[in-house]
Amino acid sequence: MNAPIVLSAEPVALVGGGDCSPHDLALIAGRVSDFVAADSGAESLLTNNLPIRAVFGDMDSIPAPVRAAVPEGRLHEIEEQDSTDFDKCLRHVEAPLILAAGFLGARIDHQMAAQTTLVRHPHKRCVLLGAHDIVFLAPPRISLALEPGSRVSLFPMGPVTGRSTGLDWPIDGLEFAPDGRIGTSNRTAGGAVTLAFDAPRMLVILPRAALDATQAGLTAAPARWPAP
Image 1 (cartoon, one colour):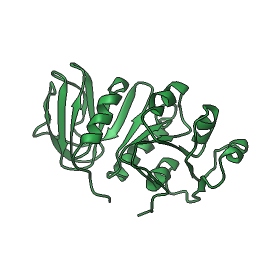
Image 2: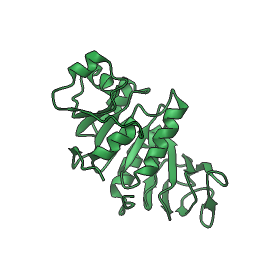
Image 3: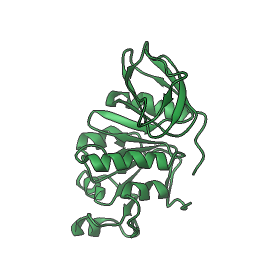
């Protein structure tokens, strides 16, 4: 396991080189203590005058002027090509919560790779922020204070079973798998929802408006999955 280079007791923002608007950055700026970039994501931070704690990646897409503008000692080049820059960041950041922007949208292959990376690091609590949705790997148990009728989509990244309260269509007793039953387009019966799973393989996809509820739920969730 890699030793953390960025170690924080507060939430940390992670910014990638994909779609990431000034509004995205403003949405998470007040929630975090530090900003970390994945490769060319450093350009978004510099353009929006946000401080850079660290940049991780193979540096194959960061423009030379941006690279030169990163403060000395904060650029960490990792040359191996067997993992994505998002993966490289998660390996070296340790925080109670990571809010990640610039990893969903534009390119579907990058989006799928980012979602796979969440499953590869189940002990990390990370929320991917997109233009319309947020995505996170469900912890062993979580409670979410959502709006009545809010969409709750569950997508299994491997075989997994779970239990729920507060959903229109309960998941108790169902066996999920990416090539079998999935759980998209469920919704809250009232507002409060609880979810519990037997393995770190279920992605939860919620409307972007549920970011506050998600941050509160992940922060309060009592248990983490063990590191692989």
